[in-house]
Image 1 (cartoon, rainbow, N blue to C red):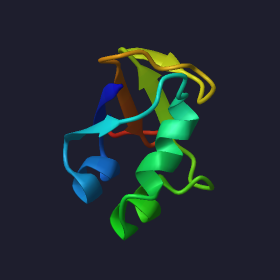
Image 2 (cartoon, rainbow, N blue to C red; image 1 turned 45 degrees about the vertical axis):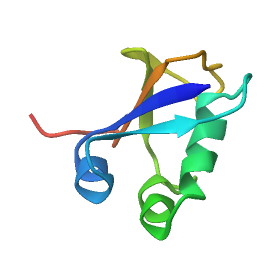
Image 3 (tube, rainbow, N blue to C red; image 1 turned 120 degrees about the vertical axis):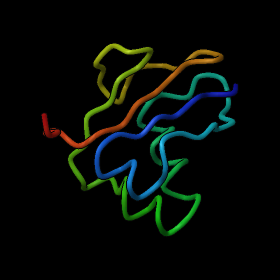
Image 4 (cartoon, one colour; image 1 turned 180 degrees about the vertical axis):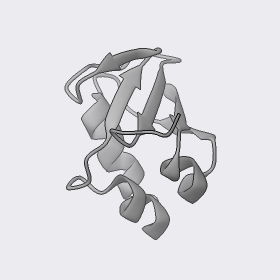
Length: 83
């Protein structure tokens, strides 16, 4: 499946505003995060599993156990963003 990934706040500064990822059917948001961590050192630092991050699936806050579907949009951002 092709997934659109968006980054906000400090993640956007580290990784850019967005990218696409190819993942197998049945992938969860958490599995996508691990897939992205493996892409590069920058991804590993920004999305490290021990780092507290919020996520949204199709513009709705979600947990990392949410399953993805084709053409889904996943957003990652720090738990507190500036206003």
